[in-house]
Image (cartoon, rainbow, N blue to C red; front, side, top):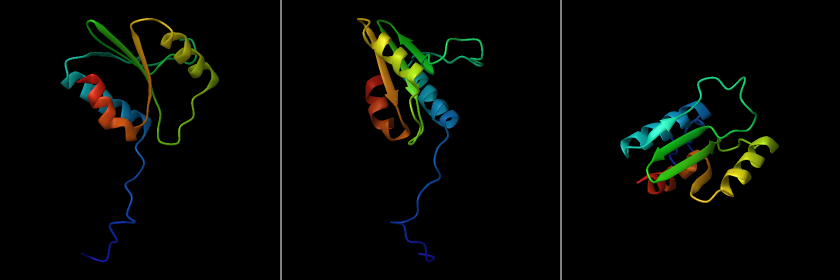
Length: 105
């Protein structure tokens, strides 16, 4: 190799926007309908980033970077929505991409 130590070379951290794009593309690949609000300025704080539907399933997911923190408003929404029968609610990070693919498959 050209002097790079593969074991210590790390990839740059993915942004939340890039992660959202990956999740949406994966969902569409598995024929899910995907909704993400373009601008959430006038929306209630904390609503999950993405909604995906493929009957009979409804999946809501909050997307965070590897170090992103869940706000109290986001945690409250995730708890409330997770208590609704039939609604699948997740907090996903980029390292979860394999699991996300399994869930959406």
